[in-house]
Structure formats: structure tokens, C-alpha cells
Image (cartoon, rainbow, N blue to C red; front, side, top):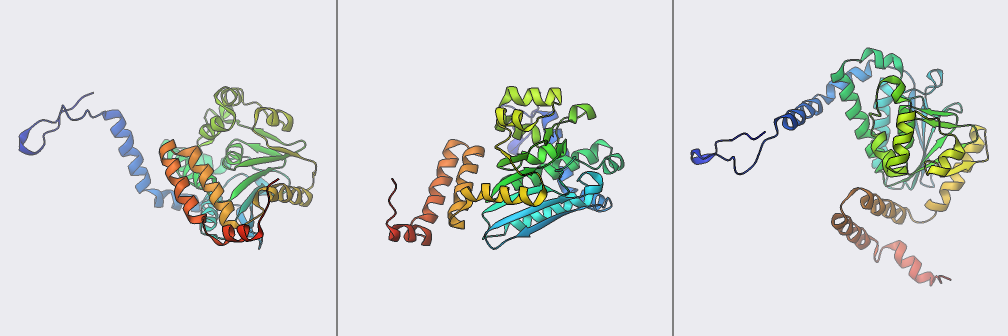
Amino acid sequence: MEHRIRVAGGKWAADVFSLNLPVFAEQMREYRIRMNEDDIKAKLQQLPGGSIDLQKDQNGIATLMINHPERKNAFSGTMMLDLRDRVEELEHWTNGKGLILRGADNTFCSGSDLRAVKVMSNPEDGLRICMFMQNTLTRLLRLPLISVALVQGKALGGGAEVTTACDFRLVTSGSEICFVHKHMGLIPGWGGATRLVKLIGYRNALKLLSSAQHVDPVSGLKIGLVDEILTSTDGDSCLEEAENWLNQYTNGSSQVIRAIKNAVASGRELSQEESLKNEKSIFGTLWGSPANLRALAQKIKHN
């Protein structure tokens, strides 16, 4: 719908632009929601339970634990706040190279705690939570760390969405990933549908979301949702196996590993022109760097 706007000199600007009122109204609505982020934080703070625990080792590998076993590691309100805080901490961890995200007690995550969902069931709060978690998981995926979701047991609903916010997914025998949103009268709201299409393609993503199919390790490997099926089953052995798997990609200078992650991430999200500019900028920070000079001094031969 075209609306004419009077500008300086009393002229009408109808030939300059057209104002799409429904789109404009939606943009203003989202703006108001962003301005009320403090409000949603206050509401989430009133829904306690569980925690998101972060450990960082001296080798540059961090472990994030979704810890709410009595609710099958479902996200409470305070856990959503915890996750955002932990991601922000990792954004400032300059020595980091890798991240393993896992759940407590041999299960990954069952999505949102239904007690919190019932308390915040109005559309406005639902959209605020959606935007809050989309922002947090986007920042998680963009971390300059090579990230792995270690899936033991079930990753359901929002838990399945969280797995897509990591670079890789390692699963144990008997585990499953399932986007159950259809059965809740919803679609993914934490960015899972968008990320899933990029991971496994349009047709496979449509099949998984519309069928709410339980994806076992072999099926996940076949469609590209799963990167490796681990042989271990108990918690400590699984973590050790995941660390060894990740080490093949994180071995080396943290500056170089982080640069690789940033260059590849920009190729995924930016236009080709902008991605090339970013790649050039990153390359410039490495040329003549300590890691580059050490490699030259070693006179490494590439056979």
C-alpha cells in the first residue's frame, strides 16, 4: 500500500518510496520488544531451576553443561539467562579454540521447561523468549570456537534446536534428536528451522519438521545432521572421546583456529563480496604473526 509523505517544501514523496504498513507495524512491534528486554529478563529470573555450567581448560577447550536432570535438562527461565551469560563469557575468552556442549546425566536437553511455558503463555512473552533465545543461540554459533554438541540420550524440541547451534554433532548409540514442535502446535522458535535447512537442505528439513521424526544416530549420519557416532556410552568416556575427536580440528595456534572459524562463518552468513573482504582482513592479521613465523622457521614440508 502506497502512502504519500509530505517533506520539506510541501512536496509529496510518493515517488520516492512506498510504505508497507503491515511490515512497518511488525518492525515497530519487534523494536518495542527489544526495548523491553529488561522486562523479559526479569520474568525469566522468576522461573528458577537448573543451571548452565561452564568449565575452561588450559588447552583452550571449554565444556558447557546443561544441568537440570530432574526436568530432563529442560531450560528454565534462569537457565536461559545463564546460557546467555556463559556465551558472553566465551566471546571474551581469547585463548579459546573449542567448545563441547552436553547435558547432565546422560541426556542432552528436552527443550523448554513446561512450567515456564505455562506461566508465560501469552503471545507477547512467547515472542520475547523467541527473540531472546534466537539471539543467544546465534551468538553461540558465531563464537570463534569450533563447537560440538555431544548428544547422549534425547535432544527434543528446543534441545534439538540447540544442537543446530553448534558446528558439529556427535551422538552416542541409542540417542535421538527430534523436533517435536508440531505436536505442541508450534514450529521451532529458537532459530532451529533456519539452521536446519542450512545443515541438511530444504527437503530433509521439511521432512523432519513436518513428521516430527525421531532421528537415530544412523539416520542422522545419513542425512548430514550427525557427524560421528561415538563408541562410548558412559558420561566420562563419551566426553573423552568427544575431546579427542575435536582435537583433530583444534590442534594448533588458538589465533589460527579462531581465524579459520571466523572466515568460514562469514562465508556461511555474508554475501560473497562481504565474505571476501572479511577473509582478506583476517588473512592480514595472520601474515607475519608469531604462528606464521614459527611455521616458516620450521621449514615444514607438505608431502
